[in-house]
Image 1: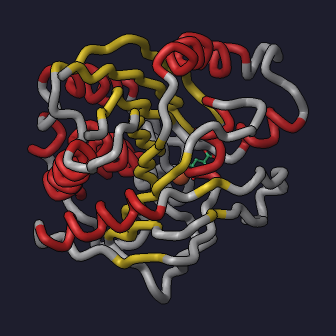
Image 2 (image 1 turned 180 degrees about the vertical axis):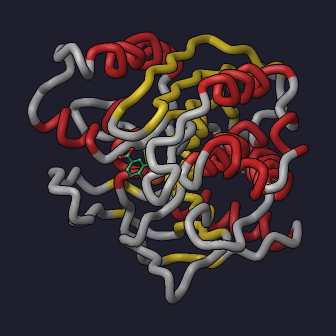
Amino acid sequence: MARILGSIMTSHVPAIGGAIARRLQQDPYWKPFFDGFGPVRQWLGEVRPDVVVLFYNDHGLNFFLDKMPTFAVGAAPEYRNADEGWGIPQVPPFRGDEDLSWHLVESLVAAEFDPVVCQEMLVDHAFTLPMALLWPDQQWPVTVVPVCINTVLFPLPSAARCFKLGQTVGRAIEAWPRDANVLVLGTGGLSHQLEGERAGHINKAFDLKFIDSLTADPTWATQYSNKELVREVGTQGIELLNWLAARGALSGRVSELHRNYHIPISNTAAGLLLLENRR
Ligand code: DHB
Ligand code: FE
């Protein structure tokens, strides 16, 4: 049976791609952000995941406003990146894990989650940049399964629903009859708002409370409606739903191994959290 090693949650700001391309990791603006990933990479070197299940939100590359699934699961042999208009270099394709994809899809449908199943799927910066932060040589040593949550176009799934999605995915991974080490990623957030009168909105106090909650009190954020979450963390800060889904997948003894929190990267409070999952 497969094992869930833990979860890594991180922000996914497009400017990170520009900083990587221009090798700005030691630049004073970027250093406090990139330095956060050293301990995470060291842990990855020790635990060596085989598969990544990645909760993220698409920003218009694969799904546009005319057709927006609430939940979508990739079931493709390969996932490619493409130009989103940010001017950042594209990354090499990712090898899909079709067997796990279909196992997750069947488990989700059996549990009355009915995701859109994508046998072709482009993955945007919310998928590619966290992967490039974890494996800077971009020689991806893992297969992947993308799980896309709509955090873009209202109505969005509730925090409670996203947590339950993660729980269902977690149980399915653990029932997958493959001797594999699985890592769960959640990308987006933390607080940011890119448009309107509150553009630039950041809420450090809420972000830190949210990060704290994920170890011992992971349903804490589910007390809030999406309207309340947007009020706290901004219209794009609601991407924290992806962190919540990733946390939902961890059912063992969960401990925090590392975190980083840095304001701002572009317009965003950049968060990073590594949670270990012990059976
Ligand atoms: C920014 C943050 C995001 O989450 C995103 O998807 C795009 C841009 C930003 O802070 O610039
Ligand atoms: Fe985003």
